[in-house]
Length: 138
Image (cartoon, rainbow, N blue to C red; front, top):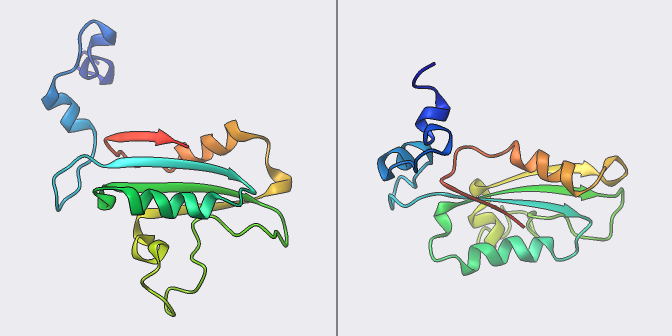
């Protein structure tokens, strides 16, 4: 229609959208009022993935703004630890970083033998996007 999404997003590139229009698109943290951040992680049997996800939350000034989506491509009986899964159950040690922020982490495990490359894993991660204001992938 005349006021369709292309018009709303800047008349097909003929103008920049306004701050008010931009704020209507992304989501905001209900407590701080700050913009949310979506981070997608496509991991293929990566031994550093768990530490990377933990480190993101530890280094963030406002970790409550983040939502992390992990596509963890793993082999059967893999020696590599699963990504974004705490070392101990949260019931035993709720102080673990991944336990404290588990409500901000979405994880989907794919058997490694079904993996068809990083592009498809990133596609799966992008399907987990829920309207956060900012988005990035690692």
